[in-house]
Length: 489
Image (spheres, rainbow, N blue to C red):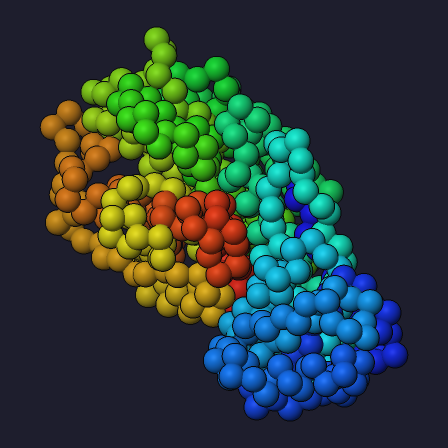
C-alpha cells in the first residue's frame, strides 16, 4: 500500500527552529498576530515574517492558504510557509491548510508550528491525504515523503485525536491504490488476496468461490463474470468491535474491468474502466479504516468481484438469469452489469448477515455523471433517518452527496414480458431506474442506501484532498456515519 507521510507531535521548541531542515510552516491569524514560535522565526529571519504578514498579498489570502518565503536568511530550512489560519478554524479550513502545505512541501521534511491553533490534528489529516501519489508502476517513483513534525501545545492530546484520523487516511489510501491499479494487476484473485491481508488488522475475511456462489444461487453475479478467465468471487469482511449489536452491511460493486461484455463499450475511454471496482474499493478502505482505529462497531463489508468480458461463453443480450433471491432478470444490455452483481451480494447480506442497515456503493451509471457531474454521488434510500444521517456525515467530511428520488413510475420502467424484470429501463432516468432495480432486492425491514459513485470515484482534475485520479471518496463519510450512528459506548 502507498505509504502516507509519517507525522508526529511534540511540544513547541523555538530553539530548534534555526537548525530545522526542509521547510518550516507556521500558522498565523488573518490579522497577523504572531505566536511565540512565529516571533522567534521573525527574529531569525531579520523581520521577514512580519513584513510578509503586513503585505498586501497576505491580506488577499483566504483561510488555509499559504504564503512562502523561499531560502530565508538565518535558517537552515529551504523555505518558511506562512499559513493563514485563525486560532479556532473550522474543520474544512484546518484541512485546507494541511492540503496547502502538502502542495507547497512536495516530499520535503516539514516542521509545522500550530502551537495553540485548534484542530492541529485536522491540519495533519489534510497534509496526509493530499500527500498521496500512486507510483507503483513507474520506474522513477520520485522521492519518498520526509516526516512532518507538528509543534503544538498539549502534543499528547493532539496525537491521540490524530491517531484515529490518520488511520482513516490509510483507509483512503487503500481505496485509492485499489482504484488506481490496472486490471492486469488487480484481477479478481489479486483483489481477494489484498482483502485477505486485512486479517492482520483483526478483520475476519471469507472468500466465497464460484462453486459456493453457484450453490447459493447467485446466477446474476455469475452471469456477469462467465465470459472471463478470472474467477468470480464474493469476499466477506467482518469487523466485530460492537458487542452483540446487529452489524451495518457495506456492499460494493467490484467489476475489476468492464468492457461492457457483448454490449461492447466504445474504444475511447474504455481504459478508465479499471476503476469500475470503485464501490468495492471504498468498502475495502472503510473496513481497513475501522479496523485500524479499532471502531466500537460491528460492520460487515461484502464485495462482488467479477470481470465483464466478451467471449464465446459470455452472457448475451436477451439472456435470462436467476438471482439468489429467485427473481428472474431479462438482460437487455450486458453493460448494465453492476446491478446484477450487487443484487446477489445484497440478498446474501440480508439472508446471512441480518444487518441493522445496508449501504451499497457502485460506479453504476453514466447517467449519474450527466445528472450530478463530478461533484456529488447520487444518494437513494428507503429510510429517511439513515439517509439524513449519511448526508450529514458526507457534508461534514466535505464529500459531496445529493439525495435522488425513487418511485413507482421508475419501477414500472423495469417490467419485462419474459421475466420478472429487465436489467435496464431505458435512457430516461437511468441512474434512478438502476437504483429502483436494486430496491427490488431490499427487504421491507432493511434500512438501505444506494450510492452511485460513478462521478466521484475517479476524476480528471484534483479534488480538495486528492490529486487527479482515484479520490477515495466515501471512506471519510462512511467512517463518520459509523462513528455517529453505529458505534457503542
